[in-house]
Length: 460
Image (tube, rainbow, N blue to C red; front, side):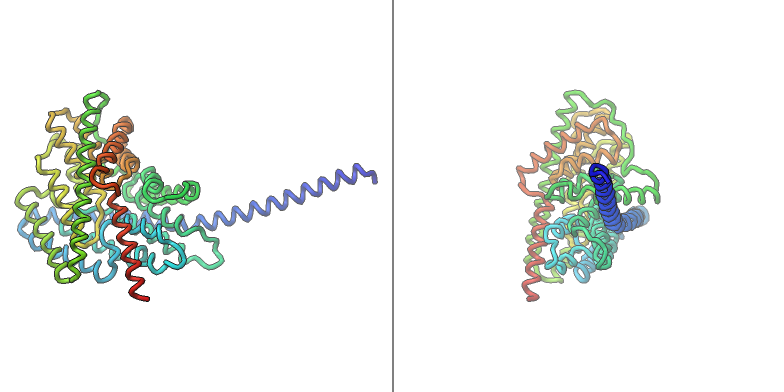
């Protein structure tokens, strides 16, 4: 056989072998990627189902407070203290790290996640956390606490993702545990607010410290599946609705937006500064009896404010947001923003579970409506300031201006004011720096990590 023919046949054989080898590698990669994705898909479906059930139960729990007010308002002086103490006791006894929002706990778990810290992460993300978080926050809602369900949903979702990942068989291809936690948190926020972009931006801006490429596939798939599961149960809803905001492009409106952003950025930072100061003071109590008394005191003060001044002091504040955005009763009393700030301080420091997202949004809405009242603005302009206030106050708490803007944008589907909302977030973020250079979640995350390490030292 001629040499050229031999060379040609050899070349064809080599190419065939290389192609077969390449196909085998590709098939292995495809199989591995599929196996890695399946747990995320399962966890996302479970997260969506839990988020829907939790939202319905939370709404039902809040309706109990309205029922009490309608039938015998004096009962809140009994119901609220009992619920505050019960929610605190549940957390204190069964899962101390289920208290409060849940976002700082997720951030802390993400920071300390490694094989030697598994026991510490178990205290932040687990089945026990899910159960206690749900019951404690629902009890707080029954008592009229100014707390939300969104932060708790994020901790619950991260716990679901981590639990499923940890229970995979040894042969199953695993991914980094930090990726699992981030994807769970993003899915939780997306399902809680029905805001997929908000979930993704939250994961990038608030949680991840490394390049987004490490997380993007897990986050995208988790957010999409969790969101679609929630939508499949209750339809493609908006958290708030479609407020009429008109054009809203005048220079005067921009000045008003900046004013609202300054006030809300300062207000959000001041509120969290007060909460942190109370937590610091409470650490010196070091006595269950004194902490129970403090919870009762918070409940009685909150009940008194609601009974004698404004019942809107209680609850997550969603009613206030809906009233100022969708009714003719758009303006608020001068003291309403103060009550919407003081209510979460009392509720959050009492020791039970509950988030700060919704209360922060309602406080910002109150400030936006108040400023609109100062200048007697039209309804469409008022709606714009309410949305800007929501973005600004949430930014003052979280220091995540883009997450705040995207959340409010997706909750209302008002894309023509996206630049106004981003402006509000950026101005509020700068204003908040005047009060504290670090976010509320950063402070709480560091405190949780410190507490966990101290507990570990005591066990050694």
